[in-house]
Length: 441
Image (cartoon, rainbow, N blue to C red; front, side, top):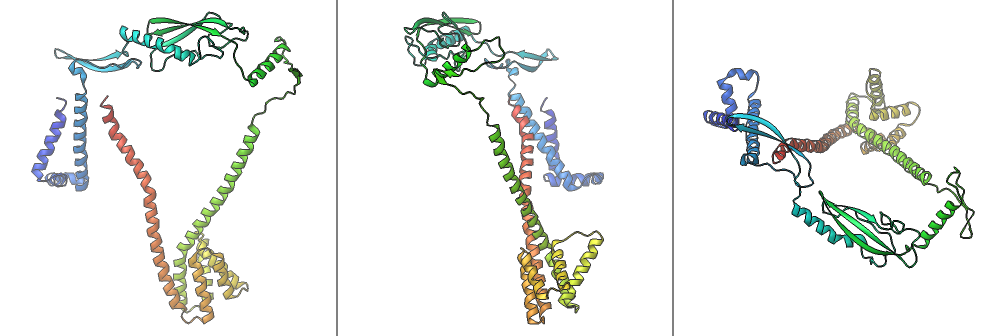
């Protein structure tokens, strides 16, 4: 019964495909011709995509239902609980009692260990304890602190320790300060617990005074000197002037906060300088790109004005006037036109025409404007008889260059969109795969 809706939809598609003598596109056209009212709500392409989505959802839903049914161990008479050490889980079941269906939720605890498994873990831990405790140190001559293990790797056991002489070796395995030179006997007892069973293991050790380095011995003497020079009832702790007969000068240990702050300041200042340089570079790059966009328009206007009989000087004045009039009516500031305005004003304030053209090329980092400056100077030196033709060729080349740059910018935009598209694809794959993945569990 659970497959009936999927089979009915699949049968409907089969009938539709046979009647339309095709697949999705033919089926969409058949539906629109059979029911013209559908064209009010959907086009043939939209209906075709809707049929594809419905068909894919039917197949995917049937596959997920089949997967869920194939992993239904309850139909075989059992369900799985988590292994030892796992968490308690809730399993939702449906039971059919002679036609009466009832939903029930079972709380399944993790599996417990058998008595044989518990005995095995206790014996295995007992066999590992000597190496875990002594780690190569002979039991007849212990002169270092021991690391008393509280567990064994990979084994479900807990270990607690007791000592027969805490003043010689305490419950943490630390050797006391008043161990006789000839050594003292200590018995350490380990209680190994697994589930509710326990096992005890005893280790007889001979403990000797702990071997310490010179630095450890000096640290111990300093601490003892401070302790002996003070009374714990006093709030002020006096620091002794001499230790081991040597003059002592005390100071609080200073942290590295100041040095860290200085380093942070250096890094912050370098980052600030770099960010300013980067911002300026980006602004200059943007200005150069805008100047490239302005260049074909400037040359085209100049071609029209020169062809109409204006001199170059008057043509630049007219371009300047038109640009300023546009600014007064809310137009955008354009870097390329700003350079033309500056050049025109230089000529108006007494700078020679050839010098103004030369200054235009020097100020600009854009090769097109340098070429334009050179053309203007050469024309002025030659007399200007072919200026209109030269400007017309330059305008054509500038337009072709603008088209090339537009294609490059379009390709760059497509590349930048690639990462968001991949991220969206990953999200779609997760939406499709996660339900199928959880169907296995």
